[in-house]
Image 1 (cartoon, rainbow, N blue to C red):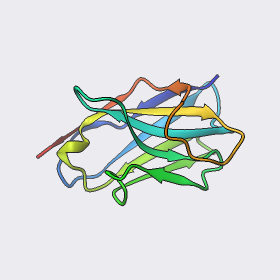
Image 2: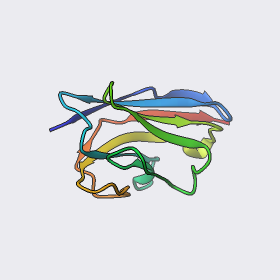
Image 3: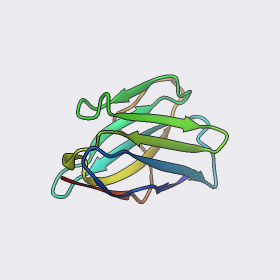
Length: 124
């Protein structure tokens, strides 16, 4: 069972960039599809970006397409979310998620493993 530990959140200004990290503690991401999901105050959790188990396929929410990029370093067992041109509406708690997968699909839901979340605040 993989444990996910996020880091890299913080307070930034609109237009800035930020990279979040998600490390697999006590395990490995081998065989797992991964994703970043966010939750803003008073709103439901929202899919942000996902990566297939092989990292060859990615999917993004329309709201972040072209600004955010998800990637994985297998040697470090770490998944990243690079966020550029940040907007105040990107303010949320960002969660890393993972699920075992036998296919090379990207999933927007039904993740089994979650990190504790990291706060990202974008000021205008």
